[in-house]
Image 1 (spheres, rainbow, N blue to C red):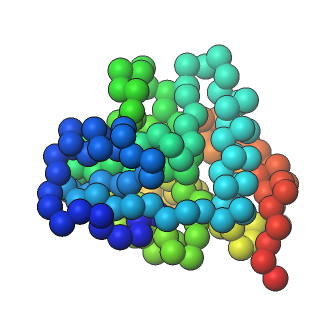
Image 2: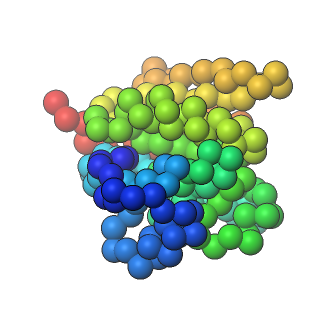
Image 3: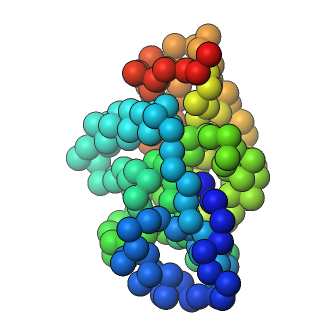
Length: 191
């Protein structure tokens, strides 16, 4: 959800983390540059919360952790920090970093008009650098549609789409199956 660059100078990852800890607004970090994040719509927030609750209940007691939009994903090899809408990590090494996670198995972005191209393009390309990532999911806010990209054994990303015509959707990385009705509960689509 990048809006615009807030700084005209490069900052280190360590400086970014310090600034972010003191900031009242969230910013993403791309190779030395800091970008303010845009706000989210009611459908966006509702979908993200619905999924986070469903996943939290599912992974409870498993050692996996579910995070919402306030936890950063760090892509160290590309010098990036993003705030996914929902993220799951089952890697114990992520307990060592309280302000970001480096080993997620699942990342979910809820689409909006201002971020859809970035979420589908450069951000997805960046997330692919995370060796732990097994699934990248895009959720539509205009109609019931879930696009699940899964990394196969050859390292290729395979798309499986779910629509309102299907009752269930699956997230294989965390062995989760949910209903489209629960995911989109309380969402009012614009006419």
